[in-house]
Every structure is written in C-alpha cells, then in structure tokens.
Amino acid sequence: MKRIALITGITGQDGAYLSELLLSKGYEVHGIVRRSSTDSFERIAHLREKLRLHQADLHDQLSLVNIIRDVAPREVYNLAAQSFVPTSWGQPLLTGDVTALGVTRVLEAIRFVDPTIRFYQASSSEMFGKVVESPQRESTPFWPRSPYGVSKVYGHWITVNYRESYGMFACSGILFNHESPLRGKEFVTRKVTDAVARIKLGVQEKLKLGNLDARRDWGFAGDYVRAMWLMLQQPEPDDYVVAMGEMHSVRDLVETAFGHVGLDYTKHVETDPTLLRPAEVNELCGDATKARAKLGWQPEVRFPQLVAMMVDADVERVRREIEFQKL
Image (tube, rainbow, N blue to C red; front, side, top):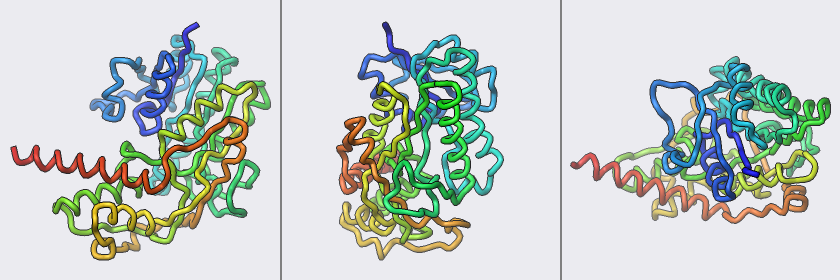
C-alpha cells in the first residue's frame, strides 16, 4: 500500500528536508501551499516534479478538510506557522491565529475526515522560555516569553488534548533550534553566516546583532526531521524533546562563523539595542534522552560542522551573485 504524507509548511526549511526524507523512503508526498501571486518554492525547487502541491490555508477550515479528504494521507506533518519570534510581538493576533488556532483546524479536519491519520505537531523549545530547570525535558513546565512561544504552547496542548479526548495518533516534537543553509536570513544563524560571506567577499562591512550572550541548543535540521518521521512510526503516540544537549552563545556562533573564513569577528560585529527582545529567553538546552532511547534517534552533525556548512553555502551563493552582477 502506497505511503502517503501531507505536509503543511512544505516550502520552509523543515518542509524541504522532510520532503527529501519521505521521498527517499518511497512516500507519495503532498504539500499545502498558500495562494500567492509570486512563488516561494526555492527550497523545494529541486523536488517540484516529485511533489504534489495543493492550495489551502490554515485560516480556512474547509480547504483543509477538502485536501485531507482528497489526498487521503496516512501521515500529516503540521510544520506551518508564523515562526519568526520577533515578528510575533509586532503581529501577535496573526501569530496566534496561525501558530495556535491553525493547529486546531488541522486536527479538526483530520478528526472529521479520518481520525486514524497519524499527526505530527511542530512544537518548539521557545515554549520553555524563562526556564525553570536545565536541561529541559518533556516534563519541564512551560513559561513562554513571546506571543510565538505562547501560541506554540497552545498548539502543543491542543495536540495532547485531541490525543486524549479522541484517541488520535497525535504527537508533538519539541524541537530545539535547528538550522541549515535553507534557514531564512531573518534568523540569527543565517543572518550571521550570510554576513560572514558578504564581509569575506568585500560587499559588506559590519554585522549588527542584539544579545550576544543568549545561549541556544543548535542542531542540524536534516537530523531533526528524521525524529519527526520516527515519532509517527511508533506503536503509540507520544511527545519528544529533540535537541543536541549542548549550549552555545550567539557570541560562540559569531566567533565560529567568522573564524571559519579566517576573520576576527570583533572587527566586524556591532551590538544594536533595537534588536533586543522585549522579553529575552536567555538560554535553552534540551535533554533528548527519551528520543534517543525510544526512537533510536541520533544526530549526525555537530555545531562546528553545522556552522561551517552554512558559511560555505553562503560564501558560494554570494560569490555567484557577485559574478552574475558583473555580467
């Protein structure tokens, strides 16, 4: 029987890596995309002929019902969200409607069409916020510090609620920061590696950042989507923290990235108070013991490799841009 999966947020970083993984395992992969006058398919361009894309919106219940009914997936991965934390302060209502209520709409559509479909919800380490213990594990209380974090808490608990209320196979992956060359340039990791490439190649002079002392648990997105898939292959649904278990500061990130191309970051990085968050999350570090033990999940890419991978990709991209401009 053909294995069919449906991914919301398929055009994002995680959607691209998850699509590659599922296709490699013989799945028929469908994705939900929003109606737009311009395409934003760069991350999945190399997969377009193998994917089946459908227009729908997490704001629109009927469109979700229709697609789930027509596609008849056995697995649904909900990766769609307003996922940039700083934007959530500027657009808190939009963030709540998509990142929180959007989860409920997908779950309701599944319950209405076929409650035996297996569901994955992309939860976030930002739910832990002002952490009460370190490292954070599945039992750690949530204390979100942004509208995004609050919305993710809702999405997490509504997933638990549908699992317990209706017996649905609904899982949440509490993923800590996971990055790659496909990360959007608004996120700090990619902002740094893009700037390193531009400074190295002489098209930028300075990089402005906010809190250099904030510490995060960074891993590779390609490793983390394997954990998503493994969760839906288990005999029983459950929630899992997915993390590396080690923290690095933004300063560590900057030093590693600049050092990879032989530059001293102190000569190029400036702090900008306007980039500080209204309520800061100072440190996050995950304990993935449960995922390692029950899922057999192991990450393959460590922090220095990840940073080098991202810097190298951005250097190559910026070099191509410079050469194109010369034509």
